[in-house]
Image 1 (cartoon, rainbow, N blue to C red):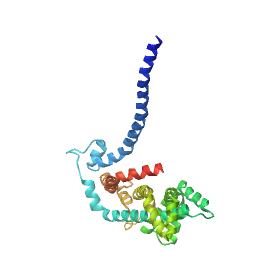
Image 2 (cartoon, rainbow, N blue to C red):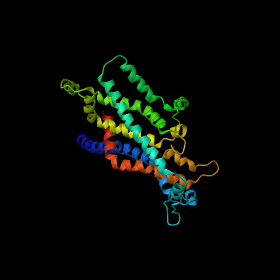
Image 3 (tube, rainbow, N blue to C red):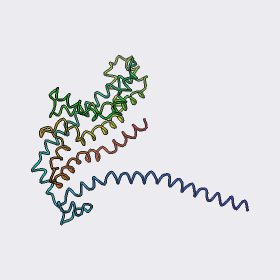
Image 4 (cartoon, rainbow, N blue to C red):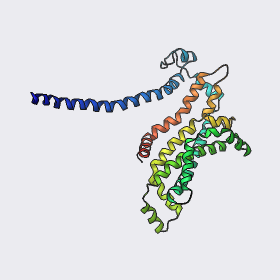
Length: 292
């Protein structure tokens, strides 16, 4: 009797283990799927409604465009009433220059903090950590006054300066942790061979490519999608970005929803293309940064 009972338990144990293992693997996947649906659903609505007539947007917002509801009136209004070429150029220029300056200044500062021992290095690390926790938008009034005093309002330079300033704390925090993992023997050998500090800095950069990739991702997307600083510092026609340019179709009494959705669709195209091209590198960079 005891042998049969033990045999039944031995048969049940692998089955219960497989059930627990299945739940342990399925629950995180289901959570990620649910989160992906929540995150992608607004994008789905924007894309399908950008190709509909105005009546169909409100009457059938969740349906795909059909032969009766399909319309390109929104894209026609954007091309006729807006200067999206200028907006795209401004967004691309600001994003690229801010990203390059962030990587250059951030990696050089991280190299100094990681490789040099001097008084105040701990305080500097604390200051950059505080910069991550405190939103830069709290200083909007002060930054606006500073840009007015420097005569930089309605210029792309004002946007670049602010974006570099808001991106540097996170950049230095992440990159410096990577640079501390670089073998000191490599750096000492380079110095023995007579390499300058700039040469050593150039040798380290290829070793921290995952960090640079992660920083590029986390810096580019917020800058491209930002509305706050273009609205505050550079609201003129010559300096408007894609996100700010989309707002001109929103009125107090009447809103051209076809044009709004069309402009938002056009503004998403560069990000989607970037993701499709560099998706593998993005995942590799993020996971490498997480492991580090």
